[in-house]
Amino acid sequence: MSRRSFIRHFASALLFLFPLVLSSPSWSVEKAPINIEADRMVSLEQKNSVLFSGNVLATQADVRIRSQEMTVFYSEKKKGDGNQDVEKVHCTGSVEITKGDWLGTGKAMDYLASQRKVILTGNAKAWQGKNQVSGETIVYYLDEGRSEVVPGKVGTEGQPGGRVNATLIPK
Image 1 (tube, rainbow, N blue to C red):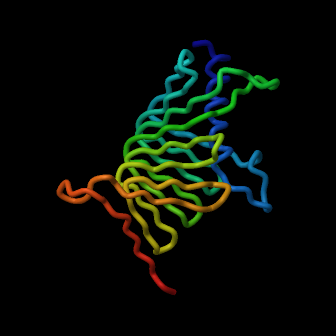
Image 2 (tube, rainbow, N blue to C red):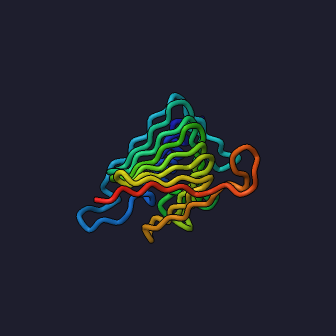
């Protein structure tokens, strides 16, 4: 891969973090630096994606994502400035995402850019302060600041009907 192609794909991959930061009147998202660290990066041009693997850490402002693998899927069409839009981000392996005092964990995470939502799956858990909620899946809607927790279809010991669990700590 040429250096120019590498830089173009790397820059496209970095753009996925911009939508993850909630709007804040005190600063502009475009000015916040983005940092991604991983043991390896592979550009998969035929699949319009970039794969980061091995101890992945992505940060921008107060958003932090940790996982073992992160795949960034981007659009085929380029904008006038040469950049491509990120459509989806998929993370696997001990996923952890934080935003301020909100922390979410799961076995996998999908970020759907067009819907601006994060989906944590596989024994998903979320904490806000000392309050905690868990289920098989947690869907967090970034623009609305709301979440849904979905139980698994199977409960303990194979019994039907998993449950959502919450622990709320009064002030």
